[in-house]
Length: 140
Image (tube, rainbow, N blue to C red; front, side, top):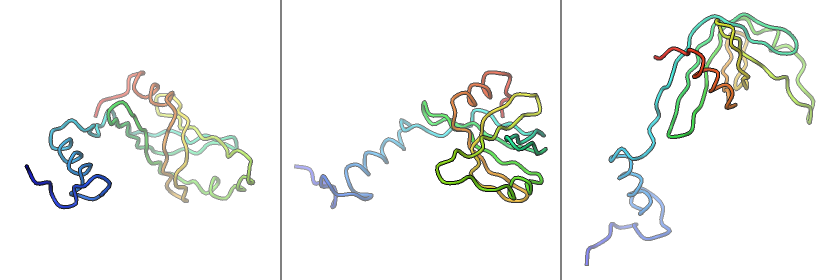
């Protein structure tokens, strides 16, 4: 009978477990879903929210890993008006933000990090991905 690697017993985790060996085989074989850049957009647009708008330069990327797509990016501008606004009370919805691209398209975004000069964001909605990929988005 063949010997199994030490620690390859069912229920044992780590690099020598059966699950770890299977994951490494999938990765080496190329069958694991790999991260793929679908499009990258750069330009000057505006961050919009119920209290106003701020002109900003943007960088956003649309990635896929198998059937899952993600949109994330960064804005640069003067966001002091947004940083200084009162925070929403517990239980109240936060202001929804949108990014207007230089060609006029708009996507809803979730602010991940907000500082005076930079904002990091994600766009989790399927409509953002469809808007970015379906209406003339440039390829990297």
